Each structure stands twice: as structure tokens, then as C-alpha cells.
Amino acid sequence: MTKLKLTIVLFILLTSDLSFGQTLNNNLEAHFYFEGSLVDSANTNHLGIASGQPAYDLFRPGDSAISFNGSSSVSSISRFNNTSFRNSAISLWVITDSITIPNQSIIQGAFMGFGIFIEGQTGKVAGFFDGTSAGSLKSPGSIVDNKWHHVVFQNDSTHTHLYLDGQFVGSQPEVFVVGNGTANNKLYLGRTNLNLANFIGSVNDLRIYSRVLSVAEVHQLYSAGLIVSAFNSGNDERGGRISLYPSPAKNQLFINGEFESNSRVRIFGQNGQQVFEGYIKQELDISDLERGVYFLKVTDQSGKAETLKFIKTD
Image 1: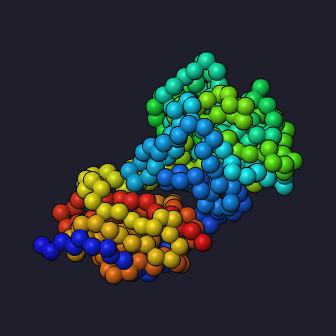
Image 2: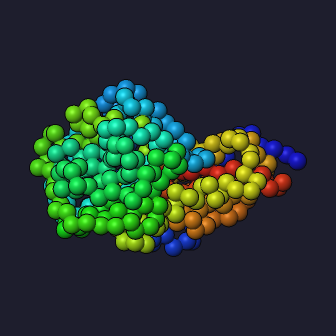
Image 3: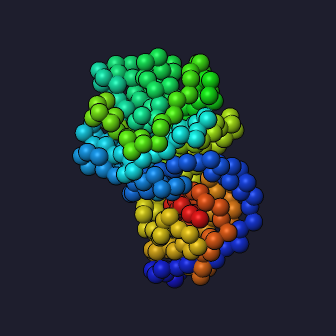
């Protein structure tokens, strides 16, 4: 059977209804995929290295995450302005196997009122929007188990709510505080602005919204993180023989690698809905796709498959 070892472009006709993916982009003020970079794909709130040298860890096959070792951290290159926010939601994936005596800061909005951290000694995840970690809303138990957890903290201007792994955990009254738009209003990941509460673990798919998320949207974000592992079940064993570039991509996406000429291609949206299935052809035009995360799965005639993630930008 003939095998191709060359760069191939695919051509697809996308007919899926992607409206739900569009809603997840509404009022999305910052979005960090951490695919080997610190770029904010939703805006211009790019991050830079603040201390040490953060690494990139594996979130799922074909998807990386940023990793902190207790001395590394990143922060905003310029100010992050949340002065116009009337409520907010923060969504992220996190993994850690380290419980320390002090708190460990996952993300802090310095001088902007919010933060998410691992509570010292208990390993509970906690978050706040009122400017102080004292009295923060917490998970009922530890999440320090070396497993990925999806966390959403949000404040509707009077109450803070917590969702853990797609499930509502609880809420409590809390005022909503914002920054003043000055230069010290910055995001810090892996530690606080005072170089305290250093975090040991990894973070992926960090989103900051200037609105609250619906229950369905929270579940959607949680489910999206499980998609790749589900796609990679069964005969997904090709082992990195193909690659996609560029990612993020705007109009065209290329596949490079070794695979059979009659291999089949399937593309899935972030909600797990299949948007295309067909044989590899000469050109992949993704210009009609909405901004977001997609998964491309190549399966050869024997059933061996490989799934890779790509990001579509505007």
C-alpha cells in the first residue's frame, strides 16, 4: 500500500452548527491555551516569564499545559484592565501532587480583587473576588491527587460560586472588587505579585470572562477537556507520526507526516461534535470556522489512529 511522506493540505466543507462554541467566546477577555507559548488568544493580555523557567507538560495527547516547579512563574507583560467588569468567571484546568504549609497561588489578579489558590495543609482549591483570600470559598475536599481537575470560580456581583469537574459545589455571599486600571494591575500565575505562595503543578486552558457562565457552559468546558482522551481510546496508537501546523491557524491548516493515502480524517469541534469526515485530500480550508479549539483525527485502514488539537484564530 502506498504511503505518503509529505506535507498535505486538506479541503473540507464545514456544515456543523457551531453556535454553542460562539457563546463560549462571548465576553472572553483573556484565553491562554499554553500550547508552548504565553499568548492570549482572545485579546492582547500576553504573559511573560516573571521568575525561573516554566516548562510545558502534557495535558492530554496532542495538548500541552504550563508547568510550575515552585520557583517559576509568569505575569502580564502589561496591565490587565478589569475596571469595566460587573461580574466575572475564571475557568482553568489544574493538576498538582504537592501539599505545602502555605497557600499555593495558581492565579492572582494583583490589585484587581481576584485569585485562585491551593489552600495550605488541606489541599482544597479556593477562590475569591473581594480582594482578600481570607474567608475564600473552598472545595469540600483536597484536589491534590495528581489528577487533572476543571475549576470554575465566578462572581455575579453579590455571590461567588464554585464548580469542580463540571459539578456545582457551592456559593457564598461576596462583594465584587475590580482594579483601577493602573500599571500594577497584572495577572500572576505560579506565585503572587509579592513573590509568595509559590505553586507546584500545571495549568491549562485558562479563561477569564467579564460575565458569569451558565451551568451548560461550565459543563461544556469540562467536557471539552475530556474529548481528546476519548478520541484517543481504542486503536489510537500511531505515536506521533504526524503533526499539524501552524497552530494557531487562521485560514489553512497543514498536516505533515507519514500515513496511508486512503487514511480517513475526522474533525471535531470543542463540544465533541463531528464537523467533517472524509479521505485526506489536497487542501484544508478552515477560514469558515469560528475561533476556538478543534481536534483532527487521522485513521489508517488498519484502524490505527492519531488525534491532534489545533486552534483556529480570527
